[in-house]
Amino acid sequence: MHDVTLQILLLLFAAAFFAGFVDSIAGGGGLVTVPAMLLAGIPPLQTLGTNKVQSIFGSASATIAYARQGHVQLREQLPMALMAVIGGMFGAMLATVMPSEVLRIILPFLLIAIALYFAVKPNLGDVEKHRRMTAGLFGVTFVPLIGFYDGAFGPGTGSFLMLAFVTLAGFGLLKATAHTKLLNFGSNLGSLIVFIFSGAILWKVGLIMGVGQFLGAQVGSRLAMRIGAKLIKPLLVVVCIAFAVKLLSDPAHPVRIWLGL
Image (cartoon, rainbow, N blue to C red; front, side):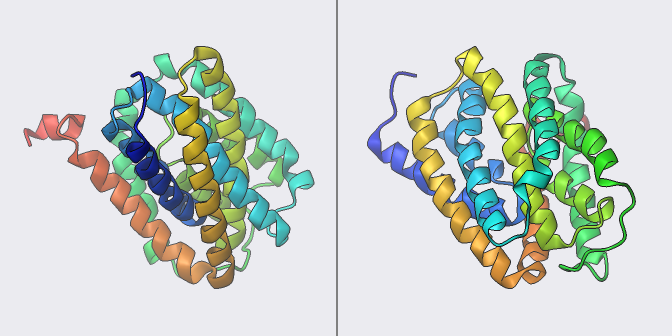
């Protein structure tokens, strides 16, 4: 791929803005940006690498916005973020040996399960609940594992982090959203380092989309802080269901092939 026209760059900028807005509230920005880049004719490997460039702008933007309002303490959460960086690096390095077909099969059903959990679970709000594990144990187990998944595969990472923060760490939805963005930044950074050395990045596309992501995340995070769980919960459910439907709508998805659809 030699170049991208100005018109396509503007469309990718708009897609990244919308992705940053949605991702800063409920995750799932890749649901918008990856298909947009593929439709623009960018090869799959370069799409994955370039997506990490623009995603890091969105996660950084949202993290800054939440930190400014005290929803995440950056210094206190630095060790957890570093674990996400390490997980993302190993995930990206081992992407070629990950059982991607297995992940493609189970991911839509995991997302539907997460959506149902947040849809039917009573008393889910911005108030923190009882923790099921210490912050230290959470940071050395689930954080690098989900970071590894983000580096190796990616889709649904924000939803998995939200579920982990709410059910295991006892966070309220707004605090969980803020910390999810910090760890997303970490895993994006780790995998981006690996993709840089692989040369699979279109820098002009990534940086232009990054500006869109940054601006969209600023708008989305501020709206989430203003409205809280009343916005985060339904949008999280919608994003998970939409992502599951998108995955299952692919004629090449193994489940559809098995069922002859």
